[in-house]
Image (tube, rainbow, N blue to C red; front, side):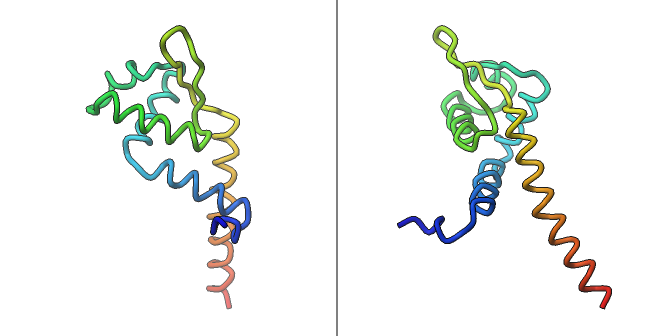
Length: 110
């Protein structure tokens, strides 16, 4: 049995998101795709000081976390940011931090 079952779905989803964003290369890839969507792995490799295989691994992590999508096109995969999931991720992060900020503010008042 997975220990993830001990946590609610928002906690699990937030942890997957944070893990996906837990490497500077993946953050940079997201930035690249936000600046110019529809990039191949080769396009992204040209903008990073990383090998093709390393970039592919990072793309896979981002794809598994649903932050990006990939469409097969001939012999390549075209990557883009999943803007719907990005908005959901932003909401998850905001709710998480805002709830804790509100708790801290309330506890300092009393």
